[in-house]
Amino acid sequence: MSQFPTWADGAPWFAGWGTLALINAALAQGKNRSGLLWFLLSLVLGPLATLVLVLLPKVRSKMF
Image (cartoon, rainbow, N blue to C red):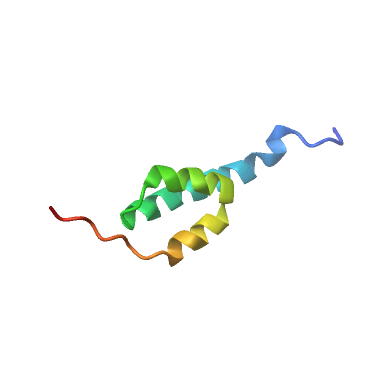
């Protein structure tokens, strides 16, 4: 066994972080916000982005 961590050791962490980013994108779209922007923010900020997104109010849609 190797004493050094491998990429496979972090695979569950990456999968969880990516799943959280997808969930945040869907949550953002439900609040009329940019799903892509929040997906990318979530990749960087992780659970902190979730907290911010949950606390933000829903954006009213513009009616023309």
